[in-house]
Length: 90
Image (cartoon, rainbow, N blue to C red; front, side):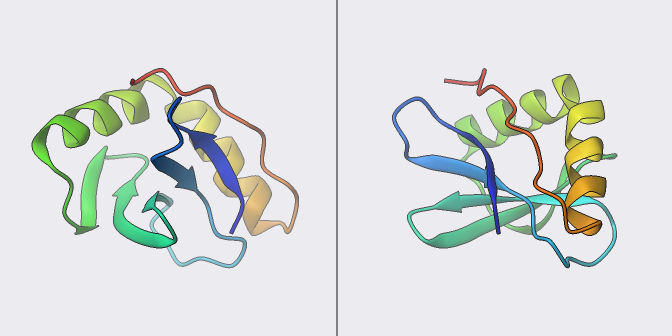
């Protein structure tokens, strides 16, 4: 599961899976564990829980990068390497 973005301090990573299920979503990873799945189109947590401050930052980042996230989702589903998206939520 490739990382497509990472917090400046490296505590949180955003990743997409090559053979993941619909709806299009990304994984919020802390350490080696996925702590939440976020729907790209709806900018909502569809699985897991994020602390309130992180929730607002991640969802805002999702809204700001929806097109890039969908493009990465599609690349990953085709087995291609997704592109890096700058972390803008620290």
